[in-house]
Amino acid sequence: MRIDIITVLPDLLKGPIDHSIIRRARDKGLIEIHVHNLREFSQDKHRRVDDYAFGGDAGMVMCIEPIDRAITHLTAHRKYDEIIYTSPDGKKFNQQEANRLALVENIMILCGHYKGIDQRVRDHLITCEISIGDFVMTGGELAAAVITDSVTRLLPGTISDGTSALTDSFQDGLLAPPIYTRPAEFKGWAVPEILLSGHAAKIADWKHEKSLERTRLLRPDLLDKKSKNY
Image 1 (cartoon, rainbow, N blue to C red):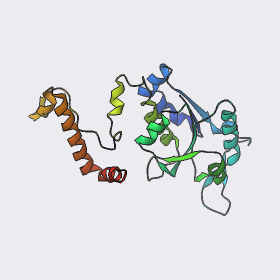
Image 2: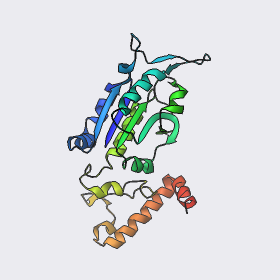
Image 3: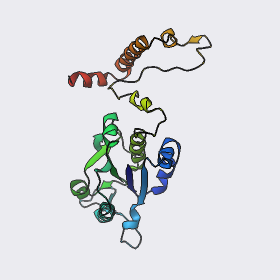
Image 4: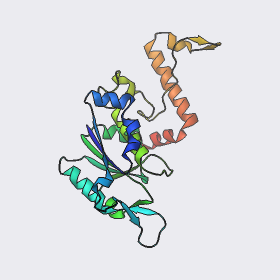
């Protein structure tokens, strides 16, 4: 897989993509991540990529011209399955969307910034808009890092135990059950006996019940969604 990220702040992405699981995936050749500075596609002598909004609205707007040049440059070399714009009013990112993106070959992510982006970019140059939550940040770089991390960990070979990602929260529409490790008792707090029993079927039943219990308590909206899908 290859992910290309277009941004006005490329240094902001160095930390998230150069460490931990993403770095291991890159070292293994499972994913290529390329960060492109949007200012390099500006023809302004000061490399500006923003301008005032028509209509007198407050805040600066990302211009269409450098964005079009950047996207045209990248699409000239390969076909992209998705060209994503990170926006607070985009489609809410979730595990199912991460699963879908993990199955494609090439993704481009355009990071929003300033007040927003020229609407013509949204109308003609991108294929989808993604939000990581109902809040506004100073830019889409962190959202791009979130999407990249979530997708990368799903690629076969990224995580040493491939079944681990399949049991994460949200994979089956529920929160994950509680998990424990050694010691079996600490300060009088004991691990549930069922987990020490070695009885696989009973443990599986316990985990499912606990998933339902936690979801009902913490995220009842997920249960509502599951019921609507039946």
